[in-house]
Length: 282
Image 1 (cartoon, rainbow, N blue to C red):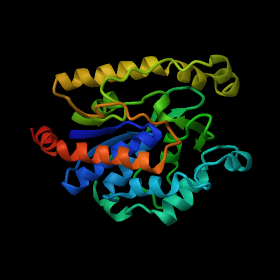
Image 2 (cartoon, one colour):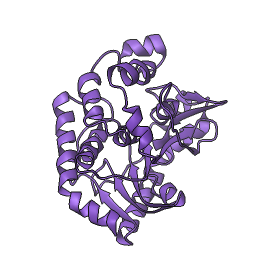
Image 3 (cartoon, rainbow, N blue to C red):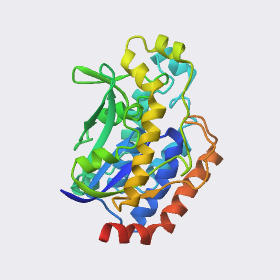
Image 4 (cartoon, one colour):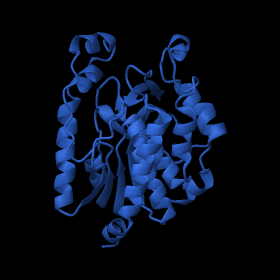
């Protein structure tokens, strides 16, 4: 169905690396008919399809330290550290709106991954219109402990990275012959168990299968990375990732660190342009 696809890992602020890579792609007219993103990767994917150059970079640089974006005041007022209503409301629609016309004219398939809070399983959304809301992206980014689950229809959803962090297999199952995969952890990274199992189970007692997914995530994640690099050996994937650890947390990073991460992604994106063009041309 699709000759090539683009797979975008999340990672909070680490996804600034992806923003840099994708800006290099936009500048060099690299396009994909299918994009699948997880958490911050889904936001990157939508901005990329809209060809909103620097949008995700500027949103993070200018607003990730803003109290309207995240704060303990938001925790007290809204019940979540990340002010998701403002992020996916005023920020997304008024301050830094998507280029809807370009997004829609791309004719690309966009898939956003979220985790069903009741089943603890990944689900896949294919939004086509963001004019009025972007609940699918909001759900894909709803990080447990920092945000409340997002309701879509009758169900509630958390961050897709809990259950399908690097959805290359889904992209291939959706009909992609091969994919470019952008990771936000370095090439040698191995995820360790999270720990604090009792506290996690207590906080997530309403959604025990989400708690289970959190505690088992390292196994899923490491297996997915092995799969991605195996697919690269077989010619079905081209991986772009940091050469060294980014040394940053998921949410709280200085502006200077964010720009360093973005610039690293941008320069690695430019460096890999010919390699990517050859890969998607074959």
